[in-house]
Every structure is written in structure tokens, then in C-alpha cells.
Image 1 (cartoon, rainbow, N blue to C red):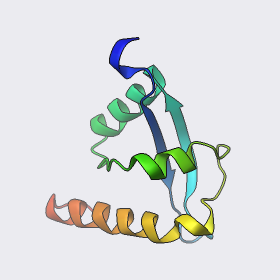
Image 2 (cartoon, helix red, strand yellow; image 1 turned 60 degrees about the horizontal axis):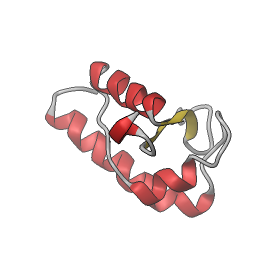
Image 3 (cartoon, rainbow, N blue to C red; image 1 turned 90 degrees about the vertical axis):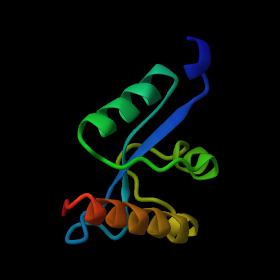
Image 4 (tube, rainbow, N blue to C red; image 1 turned 135 degrees about the vertical axis):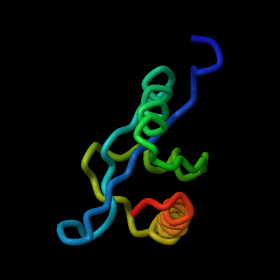
Length: 91
């Protein structure tokens, strides 16, 4: 496993028409985390590293809404993703 052991990744999705808050759509550690990151890159999805936030979100169940105490940090990340997408000419 080498360097990928211990690496974690969490994917979020937010549907403002359907969800009250972003939801966990994928999570994993080690090789699974690497695969999540690889798929995001292939799909052109921006990736933001935040070790502390991943530690909190990785404890949640799949499809769970993020907890209120993470709203501010996740909002900052979503704003960053929006900016990256705008700069790349994507909606």
C-alpha cells in the first residue's frame, strides 16, 4: 500500500432544490481514496485538501448531510470550487 495508506477522501454533492445541506456521496481511505481523487480529476471536479474537515466528514455515513458545525468551512470550499469553475469557463 505504501504512501496511500492512511490517505482519506470524501466527496460531497449539493442539490439546492432537494437538500438542506451538502451530502456525503463517496468516502474512502488508502486505495479507495486515491480512486475517488482520480475519478474527480478525470471528471474535471476541483479537489480541495482539508485534512481536519476530511477527518470529520469521513465519520459520517454515505448520503448523510454534513453537520452544522462544518457549514462555514464547506461553504468556503464550495465558493472556491465555484471560482475555479468560473475561471475554467465551466458552470
